[in-house]
Image (cartoon, rainbow, N blue to C red; front, side, top):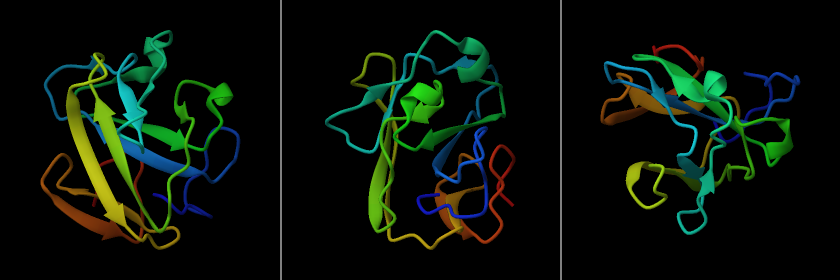
Length: 136
């Protein structure tokens, strides 16, 4: 969600841009040490020091805040997303192996865009976003 005014607040009560990552695999994955960015030329490493926050359970979800406030914790990314269009890149811990990318066009405030079913190939807009839960 690149334009979040009222739908989902972070732990500080801020309505920031957010990206949800889904683990469709059979085991939990710690993505601490992976890279996440909206600029493929400058990927930012997700801190690896807090696996209790960066581990995604099998079939689970994790939400990252693109709020340009990385001092708020490992789930806060040092970028904001562009509501008029942007991209999201996820790289493996080597910083070079691209695991996933989504390039999106102009977004509507408080409407999320996500895959349906979770982890699938189809993208939809959701009037009622469900961060941390299956897309419905």
